[in-house]
Image 1 (cartoon, rainbow, N blue to C red):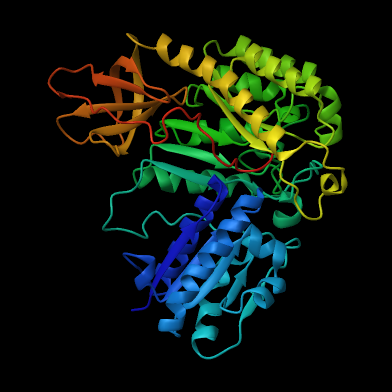
Image 2 (image 1 turned 90 degrees about the horizontal axis):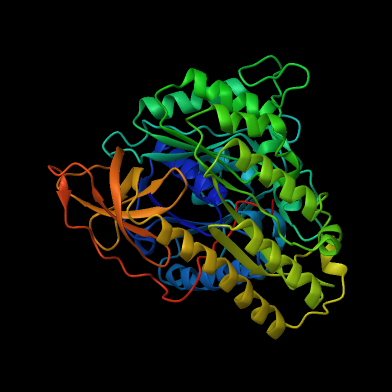
Length: 476
């Protein structure tokens, strides 16, 4: 049987899409290769939110092209946002590529590969499915011989209508298209029946969701928020679900209905990733974020009043065109005031076709780097204090699997990473633990039940001294 490998760059949406591509290929008779080097088909699932991701793609394609010179039958495909953004141009720049596939065409993958394997020229499929949006559901039975992961992603919408001036997502994912609530609830039901304990709902601006079916499981009566109704429908119809998360919301859609859902639904995790991008009203206006810092603070205050102890993480861009030192200092002040347990900071990256790409670059790369370090240090100060405050407390964690340094790893409902030892394999369990000590980015704990207790692992931070950074699902 032919084999495949998927190499994923970027965000949770890409991780989700890679999983769906694997399911589609296995359904068509492919098997997953142990290593990309031995695969008959290598798919690079790409991200274009930052320029660095594109550079990484070019480097990776060059590496795989060397394999193809030794093995001409190897098929190289580029999928995801760079594929959507560049289209035919990728083929002219990198002749080794056989397939360019946008995010809306994943279901066509087996047929396109069959054409290529039979001698067809390179194929490009990057049209948006605007008239009849397609959403590939998870197939939890696709790997019957493999234990299911306890956590899963479920897409509720795709595309974005916000049009922030720095963001390429509307150009690579298209306008907002929504999935019927009944389909979303049904997929969550199937995942939970297969052993999934936690689901994260995905969308470019996930809390702007509307049920296209109308009157469905997540539909709202007049005055109600449709995303909040979707959360309530999942909670009511899938009671065996242990935890429900969502990412990434846009601050202006964090309305009173969603805040009330957080207060009333125990299944909702007590953590929200809420991108602020800047603490300067002047910069927020240039970013076309459509809220100011006071509105952001008000929404955070409402959420914390409704759910005491809830934690927040955020995304911040430094060095946006026109960001003066005073603007940056306002951002740092907001980060210190809010007290985020995770600050994901990025230097402004000029994206082709976006309004911000036309603005004068008046912040040097050196200054961007200095501001980023200062921002992350401010975020790390609070994060360290927060983690230290958890020592001695008992927590309930969802165990996600073996840890890299031994033992097991899980997360609290507030999204803290916890390392623990256990005499048996507790993967997928909600386990009561006692926090013993705090690391830079995680916690060490012991199982409360002495019969299951084992020596906890002592993981080392992968990059000592560095604050955690990652690509967001979107620029939300």
